[in-house]
Length: 240
Image 1 (cartoon, rainbow, N blue to C red):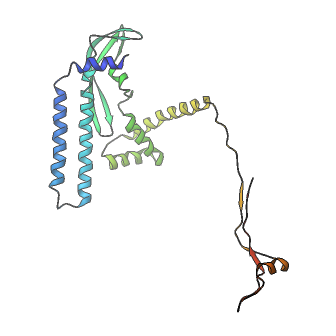
Image 2 (cartoon, rainbow, N blue to C red; image 1 turned 90 degrees about the vertical axis):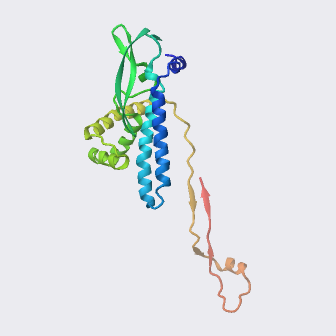
Image 3 (cartoon, helix red, strand yellow; image 1 turned 30 degrees about the vertical axis):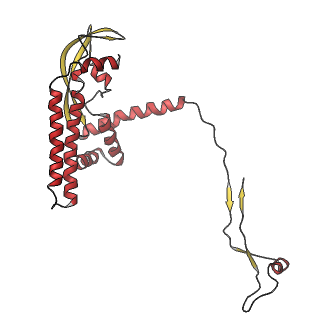
């Protein structure tokens, strides 16, 4: 599928709800600015917590705008694919659980005989499940630190998102197959040249006894209160 051709066609059919999304983003941004200006007598950590929550809401609105800008995946009555000519059908909604929260994505389905698919899902590389790849990555990082229930509790504490324990477990198990595929792929790559190994030896500089003949060469005459030197600092480095 030609991404540029699809994008050009979709932009030519811009629906009015894009303006609605833009207005919602502007209102939320202005609300944040107003709250910051009016919070002169609040403690810094309180303002910080409020900002974080409002910025998460703004992020969700921007995601709505991002998907709205793709105009429901409407790429014309027909779409040419490698499998043949696909015909546009009915619009269908799918869930998308992002790091900012949940939203619904409306996009058109296209069909080739009995095969039905959504070109928008392919072009945007949307996951098979509703959980975004960005969210799944963070959940997996939390899963590594402890049990699945603890991971969901941390996710709620950090991002105010509620994820079921079973969802966290499923994301972790499915990601495991991706890691296995990654390491299997690494085995097919050519090996790089191994660098040379070096061994470095150093001494601690402690004094070692000297023979009297060598000690006499260091200083022929001693000052008042000085003692004749019997040891010399040993410094040495070796490399192999």
